[in-house]
Every structure is written in structure tokens, then in C-alpha cells.
Length: 259
Image 1 (tube, one colour):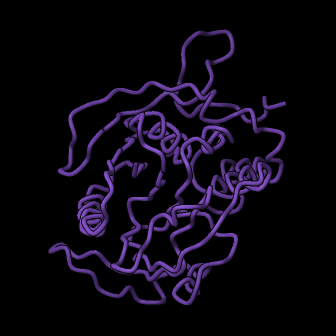
Image 2 (image 1 turned 45 degrees about the vertical axis):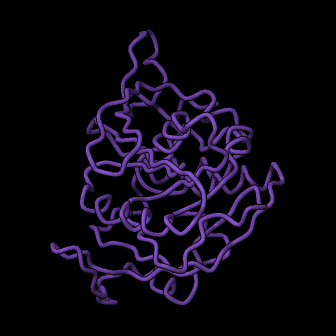
């Protein structure tokens, strides 16, 4: 099951999904594509969306491929090695511009965030972002992603900590992906969400109970909005009820209340 977290990047999905279909046509295996779309305008919840998409994966699906919409696979990509609990398909990333006609052109180096420019030679060994494949049973066993992250950053580091804590086997492929261009979403270091996400990742074990098996949500299957998608889910309401109320309000959780 390919699981996509999504909001407002239709051009990325329309480019990436056909590339996956072309790649998978060479394999004698069934697969599905699940899109979990955040339909509110609150801070983006990547971890929650991937958790929610995993819940809707087909019952007979055995591998979850957690996939960002802006990661376009090239012909040499292998999504799973057939033996590992966790497989990291990405070895290199080249940053490109997705043109209106669907063609890709190289993105100027000066336009690439400096912390990612070296990805063209090889990603960092601890990089778990972009695309990650995991045995579905293991994903639920480690409680998936933490449900407490919001906005940008550190949810993949927290997932890595869960994987290490549970002693899952990990291997990395040698795949090249193209990162499709979009505005840099990295917030300044003093952003409250960024600081709280960093705090959560640095204290991962304290929050292992927060995850796919406990996160609240409102989700509904709707008609697919893009050709090639098997299941499309509209999602919101990822936070606990407001104290003193039964109402769930998306992305208003007060991290100071975490004990």
C-alpha cells in the first residue's frame, strides 16, 4: 500500500502517481494507492495523515510505503527488499522543477535549501524522510508515527527512534528520487511548533503511547480526485478534545499540557 499525505499539491500527485504505476508494472505484485488529505486549514499534520492512511490500507496488504507527494521515483528505485522490517528506498535526491507540461528540469543549486544540497551525492545515514517502507504489522506494533507533531519537522526522527527502540531490522536501497519544487516550508528556529516538535523528538520514549493506535480523527472515504488512486480519505480533527468540552478541534493541542 502506497500511503500519501496530501494537501494542495495536486500537480505533485499527478506527476508522482503515474511514475509509480510505470515502475510497479514490472513487478508481479498487487498494490494500491491511498491518499489521506487534510481538509482543514490548520497547520499541516504529516504524521497524522500517514497514520490515518495506514488505517485504511487493504486488510491483505503486508507492506506500507509511506510516501511524500513531492518525491518522484526514477527507474532504478526498489521500494522494498523483501526481508527487512523497514526499508529506506532513498539513497540520492536530485531537486528539480516540475514544468506545466509535466517535464522535469534541474533546479538551480542556489534555490535548493543548503541543508539538502548534498543529497545529490547521498542522503545522511539517519535520513528517514521522504519515502519509507515498513511491514504493516510492525508499523502498528510501534504505534506508528507520534500523533503529537504538527507543522514542519522531526516526525521522521521520532519514527526512527521508535524503530530503533523496538529493534526493527533496517536496510537502505540505492534509489534515486527527484524532489519536485515547492516553497520551502521550514520554519524559523524560534517557531513554537518547530520547538515543540524538536522537544518531542528529543524525548521520544516519553511519548510512545501517542500514535496510530490512539490518535483521534475524523475521516471519510470520498470519490478519488485523481486517476490512479485506489482510496481517497478526507481527514481532520487530529487533536484530543478541548479541556472541558467534548468538541475536537484540529491542530489546537496545547503542548504545555503534555506530562
